[in-house]
Image (tube, rainbow over all chains, first blue to last red; front, side):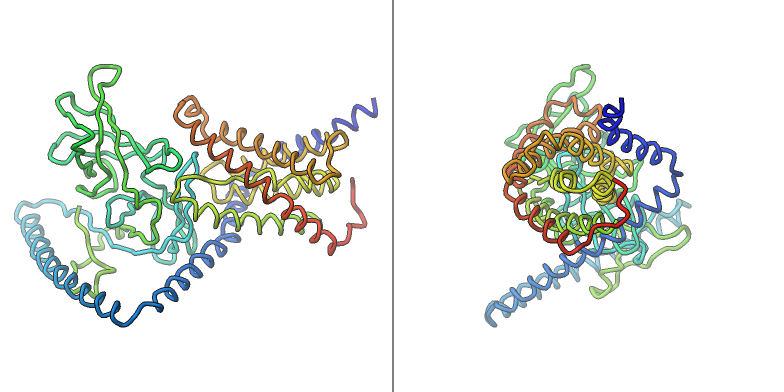
Length: 294
Length: 169
C-alpha cells in the first residue's frame, strides 16, 4: 500500500499543483503573465538593437561612390513623394469640404507609428511579430499594421514597451476584403503555412461570376467594412478560385507577400482618441505623424 | 528553491537562443521547439519539488508570449517532468545517450500535446500536419544536437548551487 502511494506521489503532487492553479483568481494569473512577459521582453528587444547595430556597421563598409549613388536615387524618390504629399493635401481638403457640404460624419483618421520588429514567431500554430513600441507610444490593441506591401496584421497585445502583432497569415486572422475592381465584399482568412514556401490565405463567399486563373492573379484589398482596416490596402494576390461545396459561392487561394517573412519595420495605424483629429501631412519631415484616411 | 532558480536561469538562456534561431528561420517558415530540453535534465537529476518547479517556471516562460490560456505550457511541461520523474529509475538516465533519448521522446510528446491543445478543432484540418511534421522533425534534430551542450550547462550551473538543507523530497 505504502509502495503504491510512493509511486503515485509525483502525480498526486502534480494534481495538487494543477488544482491550485485552477482555483487561482484570474487577476493573479493576469498579473503573473504580465510579470513574466515584461521580465523576458528585454531579451528580444536587446537582440533586435544588436541586429540594427550590425546593419549600421555593415553599411559603413560601403564606398563613397555607392553612397553618392544612393543619395541621388533618394533625391529622385523624395521629389516623387513631395509631389504625392501635395496631391494628398489637396485630396484631404477636398474630402473635408465634401464632408462639410454634405453634413457627413468625419472619417476616422489614423496616426502612423513606425516600429522596428524585435522578434518574429512563425509557428505552425500562429504567426506573430513583436514590435518595439507599446503603451509608451500610445499603441492600442486591435490597431491595423501595414508595410509597403500592404497589410501585415493587427495588434493583438500591447505591453509597456512592446506590442504583439498577429500576422495576416495567422490561421485566426480574418478581415473583410474585395477583389480589386469588384465592389462585392468577401471574407479573407489566414491559412496553413507550408514549410519552405510563401504564406497563403483563403477567401470565402466569392460570387459565382468571378473567375481567376493562376497565370493572371488578381489583387485582393481590404474593403474597409466592419473592421479597423482602411479600404484599399493590399492583402495579397488571388491565384485560384474553386466552387465551394454548397454551390452558392466560391472559395479561393490567396498568395501573401513573401516579404512578410522577413519584415524588419512596420507601421501601426493608431486611431486617435475620440474627438482628436490629426492634421494632414504638409512636409516630408512630418512623415511619422501622417494621416491616412480610409 | 535555489536549484530550481538555477535551472530556470539555464531555461531562460535556452529560451533566448531558441527565440533568435526561430527569428532567423522565419524566412523559411519553419520553427524549432525545445520543450523536451526544458524538462528532461531537471526531471532525472533533481528531487520532485525542484524538478517540477523548474518545469512549471519554464512553462510559464513559454506561456507569457503565447496566445494561449496562461498555464497551458506550464501544465504540459509539468506533466512531462512528473512522468519522467516517476519513470526515471527504469530509464537509462545515467548515460549521455539515454538522456538525449529521453529528451527527444519528451520533446515529441510535449509538441504533440501542445499541438492538440493549441489547434483544438482545427487539428482536423489535414493540411496542417505536413507543417507540424516538418517542425517536429527539425526540432528533434535540434534537440539531439543541443541536448549534450544544454545538459552540460545545467550540470555546471548546479555545481555552483548548494543543495537546499531543508529539501522536502
